[in-house]
Every structure is written in structure tokens, then in C-alpha cells.
Length: 381
Image (tube, rainbow, N blue to C red):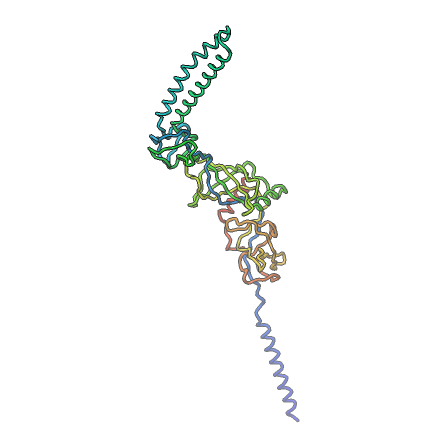
């Protein structure tokens, strides 16, 4: 009988120990971890919208030098690849036969004109018939026409530059026979100052730009709206600024592109016809542009641009955005983000929508030259 109370006491002690051990385990459980993320608070700022487009240079004027009389080339009077002036003599065609034709026509006129002049006096007194007078006058006019033609042909033996510009290589050497109307030009002159730059732009981009300007979402950049700058093939900036001249009125059906033409000064002849360049066109100004760091913009399985934000409750919120244009190391976002939004750029791999996080300033986002330029343009505006 005495064993039962002892067993009850022992069981009570064991239960108390188990209870205390459970309490200790619960007290030792680690606290819930809150992920830490780096964020940047977005701000609206004026941004001058530019378009960088590929292009090719084209001469302002092109003139093919061709002979206007037949004959043998006696002399070439220019250096290939140099600049020539309008009216400068380039070639000399053998003038001997044309000098002879000129002298003959001059002598013919000297023989017919006195008779015509004498008949002009006699017709007043009716001393000669009207028919004789008309024939003498016609002969004089024909002689004058032949003399004029011979004079023109003699002048054309000196082949002159039709425009000022840079002349290329000659296709004809001394001693070669040339003919009026031949297919092959003697040489070609390109006017390089000023010079054209032809660039192409997608028709849909042009439509979007005009719609934004018409709706007021984008403001015209004032006098600078037609200005264009160039980057050369070696990456250097072209010294002079150009001006947009026109755009094609039709779209190329095979490419969906529209051609834009800009005019650039080229006093140093750095730009040559056919060079590949990159042109930057000032399209307009967004007064409240959102430039989001590219670290904070990802893509979902549908290919849509997605941003992770920290909302007012310090929880992660996922938002689909429209990233319109890459600006340095940032995206120009036209839809989905607002001023004051806290965009997550660090710690994205540790979070998911709805999770509570601790937001601290991001350290992986810096201000590139593009963004500094955008802010400076906004402050100047």
C-alpha cells in the first residue's frame, strides 16, 4: 500500500520536468527573421527625350563631269581627290577643229551680212524685190546661228567644274577620245560642306512621338527640337551640330521605316559620303519622367517588365510597368511607377510578393552620366 503514493509522486515529478523542458524549448525558439532589402525612392524630373538612330552621310550636291563636244583629251588640269571651284577648268579637248569651224562661220557671216544690210536700204526704195531681201536676210541669220554654234563648241573644249566640291578620280586620261552624251562621266564632284546625314526611324515610333506631343504628355524642346548631334564610327563626338531638314512622306513597306534627313556643316571635310554614323535627335521634354534603376526592373515569364516595391505596410508589392527606353543604367518608365514609390534594387532573390521586409537605402545604384545630364537639362529648363 505504501508503494502507490510513491509512484504517484514520481509521476508528478516527471510530468513537471517535461513541462519545464517544453517551456525552455519554446523560450529558446529564434525570433522570426525579416528580410532586409535595399530601396531607392523614385522622383519625377524633367528629361529631354532623345532618339539615337543609325545613319549614312550623303553629299549635299553631286555633279558628273561630262564632255559636251567630241574630241581628244589633250590635258587634265586638276589633282584627283582635291577641292575644285565652280568654273575651274578640268580638261582640255583638242580645240583645233572647233577653231577652224568658228573661223569659217565668222567668214560666212562677213560675206552675207553686207548684202543683207544693203538690201535692207534698197527695199525701202523698192529697188529690190521682197523675195531677194528675205533670202539675203535669212542667209545672214543662218550665218549668225552657225557662228554662235561654233563659238559655243569652241568654249566647250574647255571642260569646267559645274559646282564647287571635292573631285574624285578621273575616268579618262590624256589621248582618250570622248563624245558628247557618252554614258561614262569624266569625273564626279561631291559638295561636302554642308553634308547630309540620312537616318531611319520606325514609323510606329514616329506615330507615338507625334501622339505624345499632341496630347501634351511630351513637350516640344523649343528651338532645339530640330537639332541633331552625331557620334562617329570610332565613338568620338562630331564637333558641329546639325539641323533636321525633313522626313519622308511615305513608309518603306519592306522595313516599316521612315527616312529622316539632317544637314550638318562640314568645313574640315571630316564627314565623307557613305560614312556610318549614329545620330541623336532631340524629340521633346517629359516634365515628370520616372527614371528607374535597371537593377530594380526584371522580366516575368510573359516577358513583361516587373518592379518590386515596398508599400506603406512595409510589404513587398509586385507591379507590371512599361519600360519605354534605356537611359544609361536606368529605364525611362512611362507606366506603372509613381513619384515616391520605394523601388527594391537589392535583395530581390530573398523576397516574394506579400512578404514583410526591412527597407534600407540601396548601395548598388549610382548616378551615371546620362542621369546627371538629364537632371542638369531639367534644372536649366
